[in-house]
Image 1 (cartoon, one colour):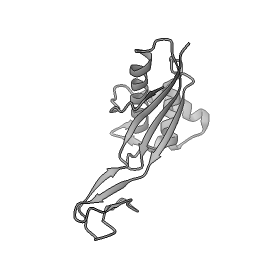
Image 2: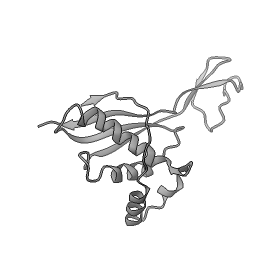
Image 3: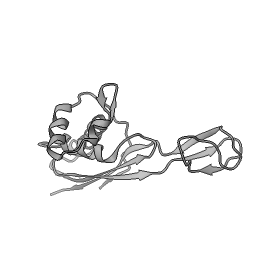
Image 4: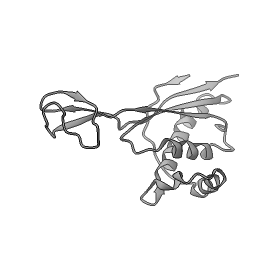
Length: 155
């Protein structure tokens, strides 16, 4: 197992046609709700995950079979788990990663008040300190989106 592979998720090409075809087969319309700048957010994220797995495993351990990929997603990352899973499954079809499971772990949002140093989990997207009422807060968790581990089988 390769652990703690934290990377940014770059984007090149979006295979939207494949996502649309797969979505029609599964009658899933939620995938269409997440577009950013004309490109589907989750498709770009799935492509980034695919690249990370390819770089970390396929190039360094040729012949290894990817069993699962664990992705940590913060609740403020604006990534919808079901849409990301669908995009990932379409992205890996007919590739050396085909058959791998995508396991999504969610993290809660946390913030710290810069006035009183209180740490809290915001109830809403308004980050006001519940202890002193200060609007001066800093997000400390919940924005992450990273590949946290990749499970492989080696012959």
